[in-house]
Every structure is written in structure tokens, then in C-alpha cells.
Image 1 (tube, rainbow, N blue to C red):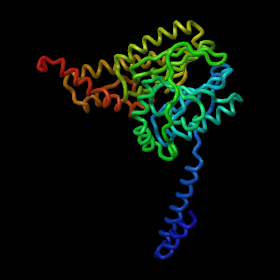
Image 2 (tube, rainbow, N blue to C red):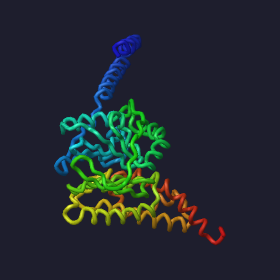
Image 3 (cartoon, helix red, strand yellow):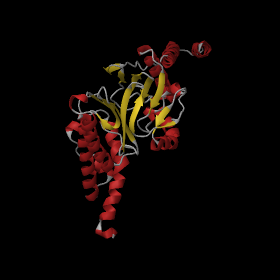
Image 4 (spheres, helix red, strand yellow):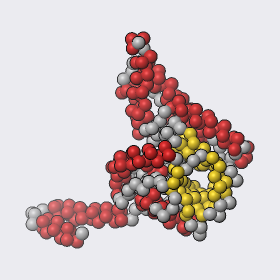
Length: 339
């Protein structure tokens, strides 16, 4: 760095104006500040206790950006007599390392298991920090990660730059099946659904009444839809609400932890997501039947409540881009002229 400064300064000194010298000095100072920032990236992760031994690490309720280091996910960890279970590992190697350090500061118990709730990148790109433990996922999630991990890495590097340095996919290595799962002194119920992705895993801690519902439900945030199939997703949300009421009845349901958005003490994230997806499904279907072009759909009115949610400006556009072509095809196939 010092050599670069000298070269730039020497060049400036050979020019006739002090303005050039001042500009070069400012450039050198900016380079120094930028380098310092890159070398001290800190997610400032904090563990919030939801119940004895159960923690959530809350991400930003926003879209991916350099400002948040692509940290828009709620991860978590649970103490058991058989060690610590980690729920999702975050968007980067750096996040995973800082998450593991946070766990070590919070509990003396060792990390012994990791579980991934779906195939999206911020659920598993922190895995390099957990290379020494079993990393669990369903078969469909494993297949999806293997298929898409290289594009995830490239896209998050573009979105968040230096936060992603050194991040490479480390795949899950242990098959997770749904059902009752005993880990040390804890009993979990694992249920799989579909619609947000081909396999959306939900983890319920039966003793504490805490449910990690993954990407099925979003709180105060526009849902993400790159793998979405809305009819299946809507059905899954209804079934999940029934399952939560059955397995965690009454006051036993204490917290619902969505992967994106604030933690709630009720099922409002499920209701919010169902309301938005129902509106989106109806709107896209109606617009396709009316023959609207995609640009016209994007310019159509959106209820104020949805416009106020996090990531509206980016995610609504992605929703339409991801989904509207399917509705156009369905409309064309249903048209009498297509028969």
C-alpha cells in the first residue's frame, strides 16, 4: 500500500497544480479507509434467547446488499444434552465463522449437528465453519443445493462483494427425514411442506413451543419466489397452521421464527404470507386473462399494506418476473383459440 501511495504522490508532484496533489492524497486516504473496512467486516451477530437453551440470531429485514453483508436470515441454535443443534448457517463463510464464535460465547456445549430448512443460499453458505459436524437436509433440498450452488455463489458475490470472500459450497452430508427426532434431552417434530421450495422443512421444539418455520412464512416482508408454486404454498400454509395447533396447542406455541422478518408469538407470519400470496395469485391470474403485458402488471396498483413491507421494491418485481409467464401460459391454454 505504501509503495502505491508513493507512486501516485510522485506522479502528482510532477503536475503543475496543487489540486492534483490534493486529489491524489484524498484517493490514497479513501483506499486506506476502504481496505480497513474490508479487513474488519463484522456481522455483529447477537443471540436472543426465546426459551432456556433456544436462541435466534436475527438478520436484517431487507434485501441482500453490501450494507448488510447479505445477512437477511434468522438463524438459530438449540442446546441439548447431545450438544448444540444449529439451524441454518447463513449467507457466507464469514457469517458461519462468526455464528460459530457466537455459539461458543453463549454456551460451553459443542456444536454437534446442523440442519438446513431449505435450499436457498443463506441457509447453507456458512457451512465451511461447520465442516466437522453432520449437516442435515432433506433429499430434495440436497439435490437443489447441488444443482444451484454455483449460481448462488456468483450472485451473492455480485450482491455483497467482500463479505463473500472465501465462500464456497460445502454440501449437507446427512439425510434428514420428517418425523419425531430425539436429540439428547429434546424432542423435535420435523415436518416437510412444499410451495416456497420443493422441500420446506419446519422444526418444532415440543417442550418450549418454539417453531422454526423457515421460508414458508415471511413477517412484514415480501416473500421470495424463485422456486415458488403458489397453489402448493398456499395449501402448505393452511396445513402448517393446523399442525402447529395440533402439536403445539394453546399456550404451548410460544414463538414462530420465520427465516425472514421479525419473530412472532403467534401465527401472524403464516397469515400475512397467505394473504399476500392469495392476492398475488388472483392478481396475476386476472391480469393474464386480460392480456396484460408484464410491464403493465408491474405498474398496476398494489395494496398499501404490502407496499409497506420490507424489500417491496425488489421482491415484488422478482415475484412478477418469476411467476407471470406461468400465468400467461395457463391463460393461453385455457383460451378457446388454443383448443
